[in-house]
Length: 306
Image: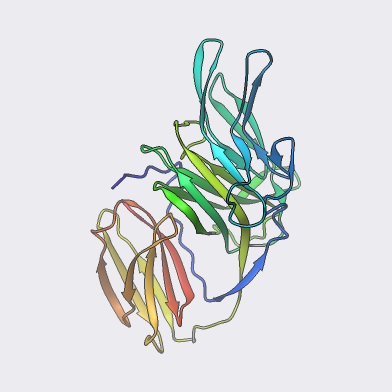
């Protein structure tokens, strides 16, 4: 099984005492269905383009009309190799709600701006097909932040998902958002890339994207005053330790979800002050622990297995 190295590996914990309903709001993301196009790019989105007059012109974002998930078109991102003045360069396929600033000579990628967002989405849904490089992974990154009166940016949520397997038919991907601060953002950016690190492209990587949406939670307090949930994963232990006290755990389950949005382990929740679960069968990675009651989440936390 492939080892995943993250751009940043940060263990962030948070809990929700809410039930998630299927509340969707696609209006925050402009052209979320990717049906509108102009100058070889979906309207309101930016892609990677390298252009050297009389020497080279490379576009790694294209409109695909053959078998989109929905509507008449989707986006195809493809990493490409090109030669500029005798030097070979690998160019990633990437798409963003912000703007790219590419310095291909020094292999630097600047990313700025985003779109206004004065809500706190619970996560991102998108339909994808993927063929990552065998030594790499396609990636989805989201960022929400606030900007103070002096123009200083303060990130309150940054989330990563890596796809290191082939997805030959359309699959719905779920990327939950984790907030590190109790604040409402003013801006949002989403980046899709054929590679794990946009600055380190690999050949023969393709990512198709369609039907992008944010989802939100509608809050309902499901915990009684004497109910509590605590969990943690000690470093280097490959164990999950829980301290759970619920009035009724007859239909309560703990799910371990990997960064591709797949449930890799499901465990019946036990009412116990100290229960240890063995996670040695899972690779070193970041995971989302979700405890559900009647199939609705009541507690979520990110852990890192190192």
